[in-house]
Structures are given as C-alpha cells and as structure tokens.
Image (cartoon, rainbow, N blue to C red; front, side, top):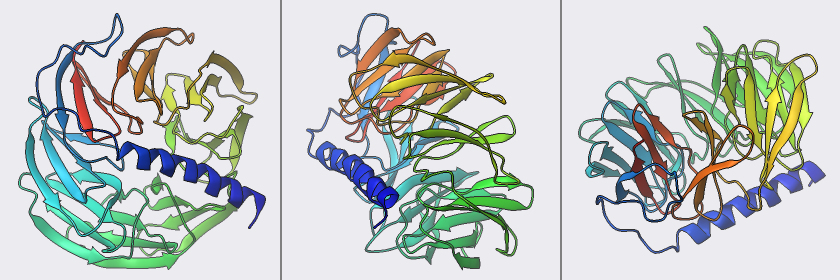
Length: 361
C-alpha cells in the first residue's frame, strides 16, 4: 500500500471510530421545547429538539417545511420544521450511505451492504416509487438535471433516470467518496482517490482525465468559477472544472477532512487538528490562520449570520467571528458531523446521535 493510501485509510479509520462511539451515546429526549441550557451566553435560543435517527450519515435537506435525512438505522426520515415531529419514516434494506437528495416531491437515498440499492421515495408519504440495484453505496448521490449519479464501493459510476430508476449508463472509474458535481451543461466531474474525470452526462464518455491534487474526502464547494476542496495531504485547492487544472493551492497544518465554506471573496477552511484558516484566492492566495482550537473539527464549515460555525468531536457547535474569536457555543451529542441547515429565522443543527435542534435568533 502506498504511503498516501495508508494515510487515507488511517484518517478515515479515525472518523469511523468516532462514529462508532457516537452510536453508543444515550438518546436525547423526544421533540420538546427547550430553553437550550447547554449553551453559552449569546447563543441562539433553542426552539425544539428531536430524536430523529440513530445517527445521520450525510447532510440534511430542507425542502419546503420538511427536513429529510438518512441514518445508520436504515431509515429515511421526514421531520416537520415547525415542530420537530416525524412526518414519516421509511426503512430501507441497508445503512443509508451519504444522506439523501431531494428534488421536487421525491427523495432519493442509497444503501450500503447488504442491500446495495438506490430508492426513490414520495416526499409526502415515504412510499417507494422505484428501486434499482447498484451495489453498495457510501458516497453521496448527485442529481444533475434529470440524471441521478451514483458511485458504488466497487468503483463504478451509474447514471440513473431520476424519474424511473432505469440505468442510462455505467462506467468503472475507481472508488469515489464525494458526490459528482456539474461542470457545464453537458458534463459532470467525478473525483476518485487518485484521479479526476470530466464525463459526458448523456452517454458516460470520459471527456478529460487528470491526476488528483490529493485525496478529497469531503464534497467540493463552489467559489466563483472554481471548485474548492481540501485534501488528506493538508492542501486546500482551487480547481478549474473545465480543464481539471489546479489554479491555486495552499498548505494547512494538517489534513483537511471537511468541506470549506465560501462567503464573498473569502474561503474559510479548517484542518483536522482544529486550525481555522481564512483564505483569499488569487494568483498568489492570501492565507492566514485565525484560530487555534484544542479539539478536532468533524463537520463541514458553515457560515450563518456572518459567523463561522464549526462542529467538533466533543459534540460542541462553536460560532467564531471572522477574526477567530468565539461568539458562542452549543452542546449537542457527540461527535457533530453534519453541517447546520440555515433558516431565514435561525438554523437547524444536528448532533452525533441523530438529535436535531432548531434554534431561533
């Protein structure tokens, strides 16, 4: 095994170990109103909290007045935004890999072993619309136009008709851990552990291939015309989605295992050891470490009301000002691995035991 591959295995093993510990944490109360006693001064007030899943495996999706997610307990759940109560649950045949995707009135989810299928569910009822066998899936799904892109654990990429579940094409490329992203109107980008591919959406033809700037294990974010990602080699890179050329890169003090955040002309990224960096891209990017934290960050960086929100392995969600000083903190179940869902009047935060918390302003 190569040194880079070994590092990736060890790092991901650390994440998985934290996840296993989270499954042992005691369950929080069912949906109730709360004053948010586990909060520092200045923290937003808690509206409700709810035990919705055993542990969510990917990002939550807000559609209308409903929050959707998928978890370790093999269930896709729909939660009422106003009350925190479950509207419905749908149990699938395996652990749900990579959360859910929602389009219109349909929710898409994929399972790992033993089932290895992709399902489309009615958003209002949870009833199954279709189900397609793809092999076990860990990476998040991606919906590009009317095509649902699925990356399985065997290194195969499937393009499914989102309306029917029919397989439009499949291609063996290599193992990918992050969702595909759209490049232009007719192509998509798949990042495997060592390569980047730009692929024709319609027929699956590889238009361009390039070496990866490093193993990217958290979803890309867009910043202007570029895709921004972090690597297990401690880099943050700006990638041109058409040419697959790295336009700039900066080196942090540890691997970057969570997605950065883009706001205005600035990018905020955090290293595994808990160092928060402010990056201003350019021909020569400006990079400055604005905070040295004493805990590992396990969730994507989020920006809410001008504050940088960071979820940690200790179950704490911290809000930092852009200069790195702390504004407030909230205590959730550990570890916090899912980014917050911003709302016009607050946010929804997720703890490591499937606990949901809605906060106001």
